[in-house]
Image 1 (cartoon, one colour):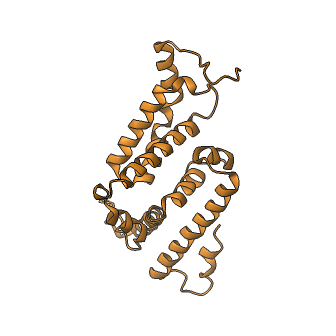
Image 2 (cartoon, one colour):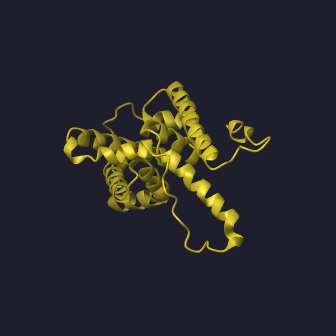
Image 3 (cartoon, one colour):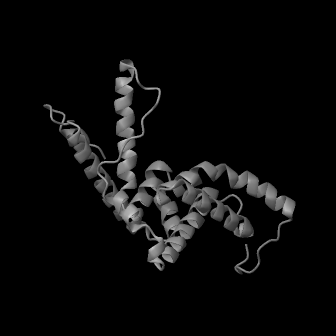
Length: 212
């Protein structure tokens, strides 16, 4: 291992393509899910994933074989998202802030219906689906910094150390941000549950409050 960052082993195109395919492409689905949760838009998510893979291919020689490929790609995607957001923020006329605000403040997002769930026998499943959609809506409504830590930890299973590297923040900040994000999410879901009539019966009010 050389201390010099300049000395990066040059791979043949065949070897580079083979390793890139084997080590980075299996992360595609998780990477797209992360991009979609950040952008809340399918086209933007696809663009962000494409940009991430282009950068990853360009700088693939800097990726250490045997290290966490998923964390490396997530970090590239996160940086691309931030840089793109900063670029757009300098051109406010081109950014639909009302749409962003709508996601942040939405308490009443329509759940997508399942076309096949019309039978009364499916009623319980439909309720579960609705609650699942509301969890997604509540997550999407969080500010992006809080949404990101929930995604990385609770959906993607990154450790605190990995999250700190992906986000370029200290582990202490990861912990405190995750704690606040979970509290925000819990508060949104408690309000939703009450609006749906849950927790109104004896002994049920503690269910959500006891959830970590």
